[in-house]
Length: 252
Picture (tube, rainbow, N blue to C red):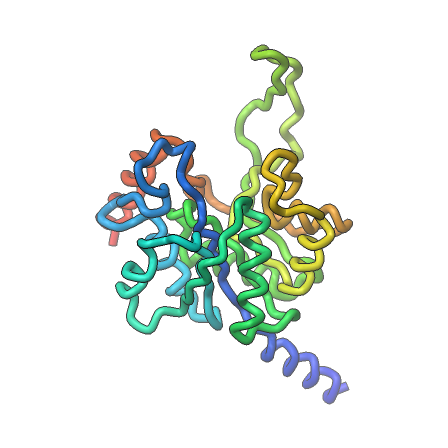
């Protein structure tokens, strides 16, 4: 019995945690002159707030930012961190799923194992905190599938037909998916591979990592997140993110 427990503990100790940040978006919905992840909020490019939160999670073995092949912003920005955990893979695709797939392959080339965990997080969710990341890790590191931060839907939900309300949907079992989303590298690669054409922007079925896992029959764990962990998407979101970040500075 002791030998079995020792073997289990040793396996747990050899499993590593990695961060993967897709960072290849062009910011079209944000109506920005630069990719939105590089717009300055509270004195820093948005993605730098995101990366700073992960830099403070000591359990991570490393991280990878998947940028556009012609990205001219990120290399200079990363110099802000001393001994950063992040490397850059200029291999973003034309969909999020393709970018994540390319990033997972690059992580394996960096030395990650298929049995390791990966935490995939939106570059534009710049209000994530180290505490929230650790909550997800604690909840999922012994789970058979993995899971994601999410928030129970607080508002009444409507479906739309031709610009009018079609029907009101029950919200008691509805959650808003957030990131990070935490899964085994090998399992997530398998799920993305099974999804088919990851570069199809018109009929994209994989909008997050959980949806890929779900299509293979897995049921990822829902871990309660925070309303502040929203994805900065539209022009009005930038002012709200600025206010939150400035308030955090005053609270320190």
